[in-house]
Amino acid sequence: MNISKKMQDAFNAQITAELYSSNLYLQMAFWFRKEGWKGFADWMFKHSDEEKHHALEMANFVLDRGGEALVAAIDAPEVDFKDPKEIFERTLKHEQWVTEKINELADVADELKDRASINFVDKFIDEQVEEEKTVRDILNLFRHRDGHTVATIDDIVGAQE
Ligand SMILES: [Fe+2]
Ligand SMILES: [Fe+2]
Image (tube, rainbow, N blue to C red):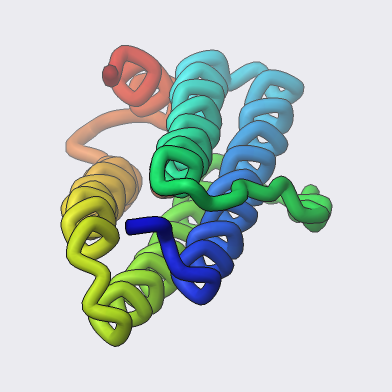
């Protein structure tokens, strides 16, 4: 069964959100590089790639089901960053926003009783739990410090897979 127009449009909106996320993290990576935070920059470059990969996975799913995948206009990301901690706070907020969007995508799949889409989106619901946790763990390093300087946090985060 081909994907419905409504489901396809919902996926295309999410593809746009994932590509925006990819660009936002790329912009954050550029800022970190400019400021000399190599570990944070590496983490953000990787995260940016992951978001692009999410967009591609969704596009492939739509295409595999006989639909049309679209790249819409992507808004320019924010650029007014202050410091590493503030960037990770914004990252957590952004991931929480993405989680809401994924939940809305799941709602459309439920409403349409589109089993394949329900199944596919489930994986992204799990993924969001993981992503929010990863960013929260990084923020905890800043909060508790445990004797860490921002430079050691940069090393720790840069070494993460
Ligand atoms: Fe994503
Ligand atoms: Fe994400």
